[in-house]
Length: 453
Ligand SMILES: Cc1ncc(COP(=O)(O)O)c(C=O)c1O
Image 1 (cartoon, rainbow, N blue to C red):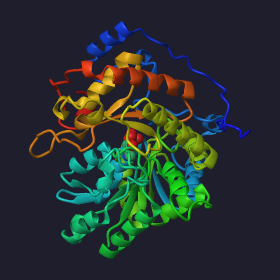
Image 2: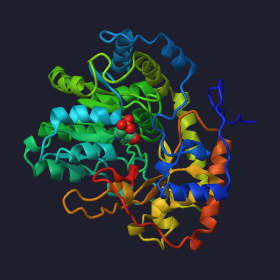
Image 3: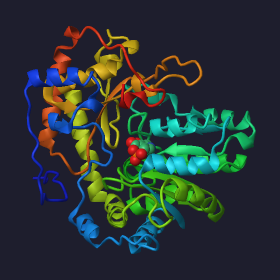
Image 4: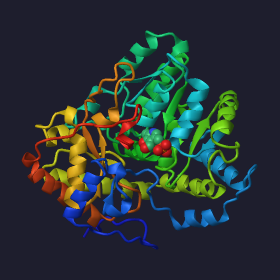
């Protein structure tokens, strides 16, 4: 008999979570004004709001926490992290930051100015926020297939080279400070970018003399998909694939809360000493001295270990197969999901789930609320709320995809939890025709409204 799959770890510590009653959940979500960010976590049974900073650290990482060096300058933990980044990603220079958006803030302070254009594949919301706050524009050059949840394309994070070429050829080079590839592409469903596409984008970037950066939050998951799906990579190790991916880039921003498997942290990796020097100034002003930049020494030490752990094939296989396990369950129940399944999350297609609710009533948000009421499961809307308003016209931007994201924290839940989530969503699906109206916003902030709406 073929032995079934089993996780390559055992559990040393557990945290109690409590089931709740439906009538309480109805009351709590009303009090939270139907914004799931307003719920306190004790009211949530299974929390799929994000895979960011919610992972379980390993015994090795916890022991690194105990030996972290908290020196303000020249911390040993900084050098451990520097060595891990050099070894795994191949960048000689790096700046620690307190999380991913801080890396964006520092890097874009050095590179992006008013009127600039930053082409890429569906920029993440904080990335877009940091571009738009500088009165620059993020241009989405993702392939069209990414916007149809029924198309089974292996690399839906890919950049459409014609769209990119059009931007590069029709604008002066001085207006395009960087090209940004997000690996994997969170906003289009945790979808990977192929090595062939990364290579082709880097050729274009070189042709036009524009630096290429990665938003690298989930680079290891991207490497796993390349190994599984791209010809010529099956026999390569994850570490070799990561090395090759980064060999085409000039630098990266990173939210270490994802593939760093830590609860807080980020960094910028850079090839150019000149850019490092320029960005250093902003790092000191916004984050902290160059050898800690917003991170505790112990957190840098744990991150150094986490970078090695997430580049391990067995870990990635267990992580990504759990996401696929949930995706397949939902598919079996007839729930419309984005295919193929992403690396860190299953994305439910609200347009197909609730076709009678218009996007102007925030159908994916509605679905997220219904799932919470049904089973105490907290997902997150990746749709019209998140897409925010056009900074000039202030009109709602309606994205092609209206999604409920079920992000799976790393090494936290078992497949029994996945079964529970799938059953809860099936129940909502079975009563979808009784869900008849969505939401109207009564209060929102000028930027990133979804957090506080
Ligand atoms: C692709 C991507 N980039 C950037 C960020 C921002 O990182 P952070 O939340 O650490 O600021 C995130 C966070 O979810 C992300 O998914």
